[in-house]
Amino acid sequence: MRSRLARISLFAAAWLLVLAPAALAQPDDVTDNGEGLLGEVDDRIITFFSLGVVLFFTIVVILATLVQQRLERRKDEKKASRVRQRIGW
Image: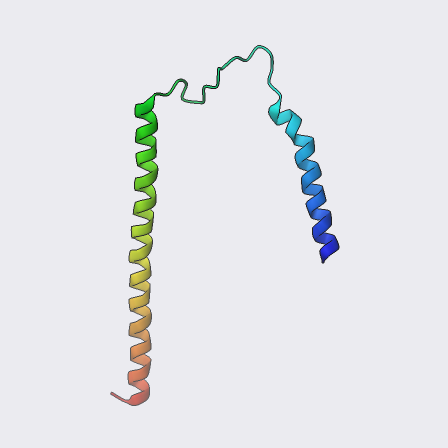
């Protein structure tokens, strides 16, 4: 088991070393000055993107909590009905 893990780790490290030069290489005629896909961004774009990320994770947490509460309620109702059947109420 350990030898397999060691072989996989060595293979992954070697593969990363093989791919690293290609990822860092850049043709001489490309001068984007660090601009991304959107081009030149200002503070407003960064602010709205960051606000979107915060709102996204807030909404995900709220929705996950609501789903979990509903599932817990269903589980408790099912558990209570089994106890009522066993007791005979």
